[in-house]
Length: 315
Image 1 (cartoon, rainbow, N blue to C red):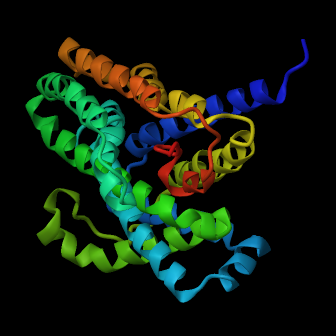
Image 2: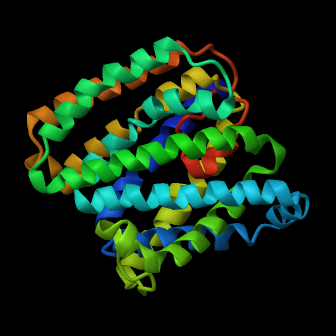
């Protein structure tokens, strides 16, 4: 049976989501602290994008106002990745991935304010439905991991903020250029922020300039190339043939993929109780219902895949 464009696109999106799920696993496997890990990831992605003439052409076309806007979003992206990998280091990959599933909940509250649209009561109900799952997740992790849950929730909040802001900006420039500018600004943000972290976020403070060993270097290259730029390119093609509803359903599988991989590769189920997985089931179930609140329509701004890793791409 010949493969249609839609079926091929669906397989590509599933593959992209699987790769995004691997990012949490790599965050645990890389021995670097969260700060230098994110700094190297951003720097490597920007270096790879700088090799593309298309990026430089797009950069020359940016107005100062747009450039400033993308740089501001890039600073938020840096903080999101810092807290995401911080959660993985302070707890584990399963906890970090589960906390990111809270991003649509925060988006339901934040996006109406950012986009200046009416607030919808059903979105508030969706957020409330997730709260029992959050309580079970917190109760299902060891005491020493609960700071990781808090940091992971902060990471999800940052996803909601920069995802909502990106929706107002991404249609004005080339997506690869947007990604390069935002991650470049994020790299600079972490460089400036590093001396202040002991006072702002002591749990994530560490030296910035840490030269990775050979093993970490290979894992960082995998993170930057295979788990960032490759799915970005595949998803931009796939999204031409899929509705926002379909894409949101598939991307909601990201924490599921990450948790399954964490069990298979890291054996994390040994330190997490059944309460944790009950909470995950409630959160993921509610998140899967979220696209039902939105109309089925084509994805208009896939460009935020570059930094949001496909979360909240449906408007």
